[in-house]
Structures are given as C-alpha cells and as structure tokens.
Amino acid sequence: MQPYVRTSIKERIAEVEFFHPAGNSLPSSMLRELADAFKRLSNTDEVSVIVLRSGGDKAFCGGASFDELIQIEDLEQGKAFFSGFANVINAMRKAPQVIIGRIHGKAVGGGIGLACSCDYTFGTTHSHIKLSELAVGIGPFVVGPAIERKAGKAAFSEMALEPAVWKSAEWAHQKGIYQYLAKDQTELDEKTMALAMQLTEYNPQALYELKKIFWQNTDDWDVLLPQRAEISGKLVLSDFTKSFIKKFKNK
Image (cartoon, rainbow, N blue to C red; front, side, top):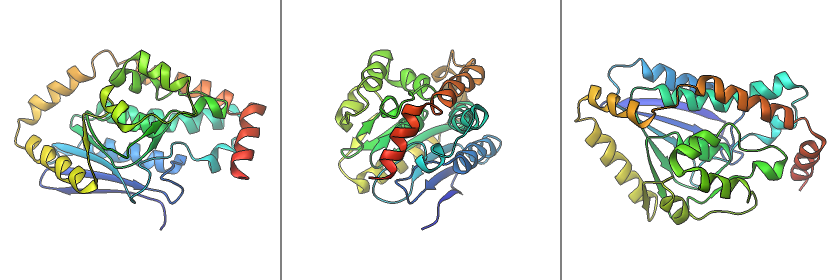
C-alpha cells in the first residue's frame, strides 16, 4: 500500500488516519499533511471530536523516517524536518476540538509525541513504547514537552535515558500516557467510538474551554518546539548519527 493521510467526517466525529508501509514512520510530507488536516478541522464547525489513528494492524507509529533522516545534509534541512513534528503537535494543541488517540500498537519516538498530544488516549495491551532518539545520536527534544505534559518529567527522563528499553503498555497506562487499555483492537474501536459519540452530545464551547485548561501554560510552544527542532537538526548531522542510521539501514 502507498503512504497516505486521510480525513473523514461522520456525525460530528472526524477521523484522521495515517499510514506508511515502513512501520507507519513519518516522512516530512506526511507530517505536513497531518498538520494541515488538524488545521483544517480546527475551522470546521460541524466537527466536535477528532480521532487520531493509523492504518494497518502492527505498529501505531515508528517515529521519524530513517530514509529521510539519512538524506539530511545541512542544518536548514534538519530543522525543517524536525519542525514537522513541532507543527503537528502545535496544530493538535490549538485545535478547539477534543482529540482522542487510538493507539493500536507500538509507538516509537515521535509516535509517542503524537499519542501524548491527544487529549484522551486509548491503547491496547500491545501498545508498548520506546523513546529511542538518544540511541540514534539525537534526543527526544521536540516531543519532550508533550510527553512531560502527560507523564511528568520523571517518566520522560526514564524513557529518554533508556532508549533501547521498551516500556510496557501497562507502564504507559500507569504514567498517564494512556487513559485506558483495551484487550484487543475490537474493544479499542468500541471504547474509542463510544467516547467520541458521547462527547458529541456535549456543548462544543464547554469542551473547548476544557481543552484550553488541559493545555494551559503551553502558549510558548510556538517558539519552544521550533527551537527544539533546531537542536535535533544539528545533532542529526553528527558522525555518530550518520553512522548509526547507515548501520541500521544495512541490517
């Protein structure tokens, strides 16, 4: 299947779904499409709730596209690539609608950032997480604020400093990254849609006011996240990172 970002709207619920055959990893083109999708929905009055999901039945999101990372040749390209994640997170933060995350499988790096940028997140017992950036020679700089907002600095530090360690879905649930763990994808879909439908019955303005409270003290992210993207953009040019990515690609 070809990569895609799709948006559908039914009964005041919008679904934003992305897919990439390489483990649902995200190249810059798809990051732009995701950010644009959330921005469009922000101005769509007939949408009260947004569900973020990915296609396939394996990983939810493999994070940054290694195919694109290895092609970055200068700071401008590096900052632009990592700003893609910053733009998606900020678009989700600013959307007036409540965003529900449907995390059906493993999430790595930027995928955890997306999960933590949702306002209510469902996982399954297979939705393990790993913040692998440090092992690659960079760091989880852009997604860090989103993860800290949900799980706290201690949990973020633990993940960031153990980049080779998978954290279980149960661990992520305990830390607040997931609000509910389903036993399988059938239950995941049932719970996700049940909450989405329930939320459509509430006053959209009340939900918007609640969302503003959820995201208090994040107004500086329009500046902070691009600054973090520049840090990653510099580090991705290092010999350490270039060597790691080449070894990974040659496995």
